[in-house]
Amino acid sequence: MSIDDDEAKPDERRSDDARSEAEESLPFDVELERLPTWVHVSSALVILVGVLVATHLVHMLVFLPFLEIPRSGVLDGWADEDEVEPRAAVAFGEAVEVAVLHFANREQARRFSEALATDQRGTATHDATNDKHVLVVGHKPRPIDMLSSLRFVAIAAAFLGTGSTFGLFVLLFFALGAWNIVRAKQLVAKRTELEIRTILGVEVHPYGEIENVDVDAGIIQLKSGAELDIPRSTLRDATLASPLWLERARTRVLTRVRAQARR
Image 1 (cartoon, rainbow, N blue to C red):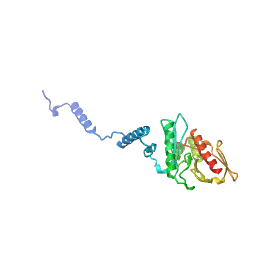
Image 2: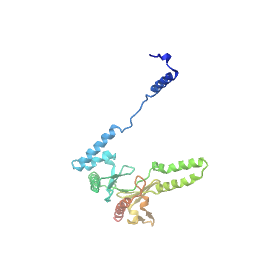
Image 3: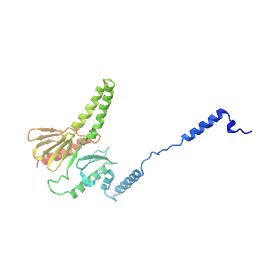
Image 4: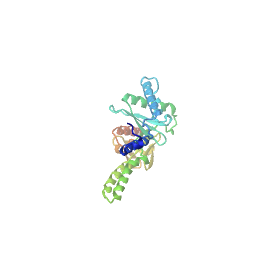
């Protein structure tokens, strides 16, 4: 015996209505999270170029476009001698930005830096005022690098806003981070002068003003009697850390400064 809808029990009718409402509310728009196609294409091209470079079919500098570093703007390229973490540092652009590249082995890092040096020798002129050949060590902090320290100000403000004095202790972390940024230095050894760049400005010292350079201690003595102290702790990479390899990079630059000052 069949039962019409009108004769169905109240509980059954309520159950049917609930299912109907659920089915009407279920459909919704969704988006699948995945990388854009251009990311996969770019990665595939990098792998392809890596294979071609490894087999010596193309030049090492073909990698530069994938690193978003304009080849014409490269100022300095240097390979570290570390066996465990082979890396090369590349300085480029008017703002003298420094990018640190990690390679599979030291031989690749060496070939990369030598390719950059060869390219610079082939394009630069012999004019003494030409700044194409420079040696660079250290990252000059930018205003955006202050964000990691300013977050502690926001946390401190939240504590103080609720009447808690714990915010004063949080400000110590801000002070420490801000101090490291303020004292961070970047050395740019050009043909005729040394630039010491900080977030506060740029000091320029012609080599004729330099009396002596203690490479190991990181001290530059000026003929005026003043001394410029460049400890490794003031040299930073792009993460604002001060790893050991920066001491080797400092030695490279200060050796150049000493040689130029003795001319």
